[in-house]
Image 1: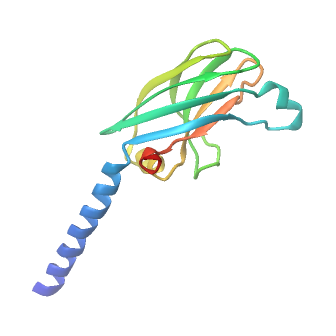
Image 2 (image 1 turned 30 degrees about the vertical axis):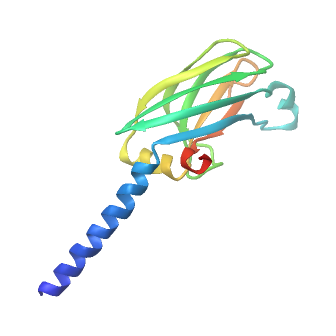
Amino acid sequence: MVRPRLCIRAVAAVLAVCFGSALAADTSFTTELDPVAHTPAERADVMGTGKLTAELAGDRLSVSGTFSGLPSPATGAQLRMGLAMGVPGPVIGELSATQSTEGSISGSITLSSRQIAALVKGAIYVQLNSARAPEGNLWGWLQSAAGDQ
């Protein structure tokens, strides 16, 4: 009986080291905001670009960045969680956005452990809405900045 317990403890220790350091390494995230037209008729309403960074400290995610080139003023921004990268999902937090065709996005949101896991796998994104595109003008999925170094 001693050997199975020893093996289980050894495996648990290895997993804790591997996954603990992997999660700790994923504390900086980045994305580029790009236009997403839902239909061909919306193409003229969804223009612009942006860039965001995000920092995870414990369970608190702080987001900041800029956007420009919108065809109509921004009306708001949200942090959202999909099932995977590229899959839209519900709002998990509101962000502040300059109510203009160019400006900044910022905010801090406390994430659950499920949301942190989604962030690490790339399923959390920022959506910037505008007057002519209220369901999303610019979108960007947060990805680990560790791969950019």
